[in-house]
Length: 62
Image 1 (cartoon, rainbow, N blue to C red):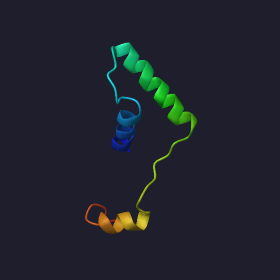
Image 2 (cartoon, rainbow, N blue to C red):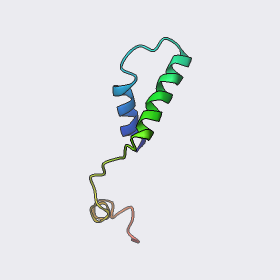
Image 3 (tube, rainbow, N blue to C red):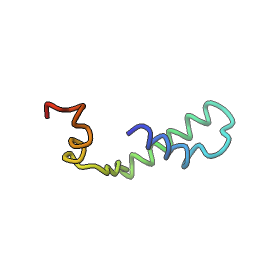
Image 4 (cartoon, helix red, strand yellow):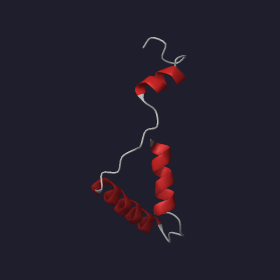
């Protein structure tokens, strides 16, 4: 889940030069508050059944 969120952060918030560390902290905090307020969720592409088929060798006991 972290990689897609970092990708969105970089496209929506960090797509320009940030002048200093405090500005970066403020920008990321504002972006995070906005995402949390809108209850943004991940759109999973696999069902549990699909995942068990693809990852059978890792989760053979399930």
